[in-house]
Amino acid sequence: MRKLWDLPSDDILTFSGPEWLLLLIDRVNMEEAAQLLLILWRSWFVRNELTHGGRWIPIESSVSFLASYWESLSSIKHGRPDDPKGKKPVKETMAPAGGSTPPRRAWQPPESGWIKINIDGAFSETFGEAGIGVIVRDHLGQVILSAWKYMDGGGSVEQVEAWACREGLALAPEWAPRPAIVESDCAMVIKYLSCPSVQRSPSTFVIRAALEEAEKLPAVKFCHVGREQNGVAHLLAQMAKRLRHSAVWRERVPVCVEQVYAQDVNPAINH
Image 1 (tube, rainbow, N blue to C red):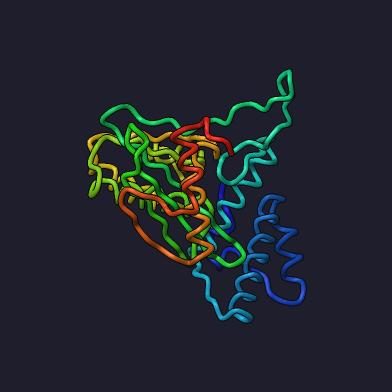
Image 2: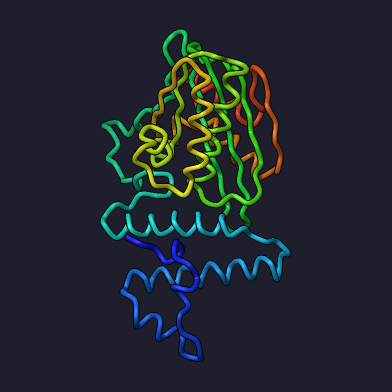
């Protein structure tokens, strides 16, 4: 199905005059009218950012955001209320007898000889700021490296997650050139990385860049995990966005994530 933001401007703004918008909406179908309203909403947002904040948002970022947002709305319409990172809504569950809570799903170490690269992205649509987090560990759970990076001008949650995958895969060959498992809690990006030939994503160029980096490793597997199994990368991404800071550390993690890292290695540790 065609989308209005994929069409030349001459095909969209055919009419002029005080009622051009009403005439245009009357001409197109319901979905195209909804897409037009999204374009106008995004245009107003970009205008306000430039007028009041002095920040220009590239057209490519708006196209990526609109495509991702429309895909999310379509998923909700068809009964698939996933969030932008592919996680299902949390459902209430009955506690086991005795009032105890279900055990926390822990991070799982890779097989001997393999490494595991956990990545995550944090994105603020309001300010266009993003942070990505990466942690690489071996089969004993020992840290090979941790990294976080601040990004300004991210297009969407999906795009930031794809950049995080690319960053993790770019770092691994230099410091740990072993077979790797890449884990993310963004189901859509993992799907695109696993099946690049069938994807039609606004993040295509980032996905391809990530796959090019993956070719530098002996083998790579891509896996989708829940947030509770990706806690360290999540905190690193949030820290990067909050502090507007970037760094790569060898064999250690920042103090602010040490507790979550310890829980990954030893799930019996109390929260």
